[in-house]
Image (tube, rainbow, N blue to C red):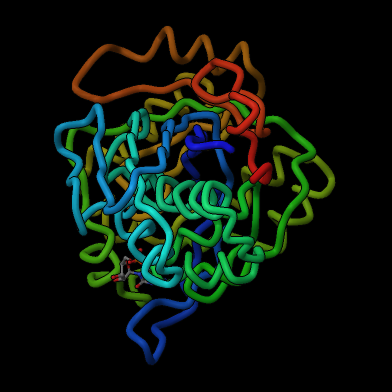
Length: 303
Ligand code: C5P
């Protein structure tokens, strides 16, 4: 019987992000296209007799309740008492506080991993409901691929991956708090909204130009106004050949979408070395993360 699973936990980009208004529960009503990319953490989950232990290669990552992977393990094991415990090792590749759902994707991998390891046989629906208890981005991370998300982020409409995109990601040296960014969001300050309908039409017709024209992120009205560096990175990416440059989620990571692999690669070489972290990534198709083949257990949906 398996006593350990190893899973890839891919990051996401928001290709569009629109906010329709504030909800009675304090959250915001979203309409956003989320897209998994090949930048991924590696999660190793091992059965232990009891308790939850979290270790990581990243010293800044909290080991207890403040870590979404811990919270995921606690949530699923508390609801299924009588099982053993888990030791979770997180090999972090996704920057923290970056707008790339690094914590949420680790949490999704832990839910999937524990469900398989302890043969809990939870249905996708049951896992989705646990995922939403942990955070708004966790249901998407659990489902994977590309999806149009509404509600808090949990109403998911899967989009087929007809194109393989090439991105350059630039993570500034600072991080932002998602709660603070949403807290400062003011709908009246929004001048450019994404055109979600045009995005979807372009997506279904593999028309990258239409897709790019339709992409916007309304949270730039908070984060990019507070940090002018974001606008300057966007301009640099466009100068280096990006068809579109946009902030992901609440930021501060900015990504450039390129026509093909060669132009993204060229921009990666040409991006001047500085304080920022730069990543050359593609759409995640379940097979390759961080430039390596994933292990059999790392394929989404196998557990
Ligand atoms: O759900 P999660 O804890 O990941 O969300 C982090 C913060 O982002 C929330 O506390 C909330 O302030 C904000 N948020 C929101 N509306 C959403 C998702 C997140 O206001 N749909």
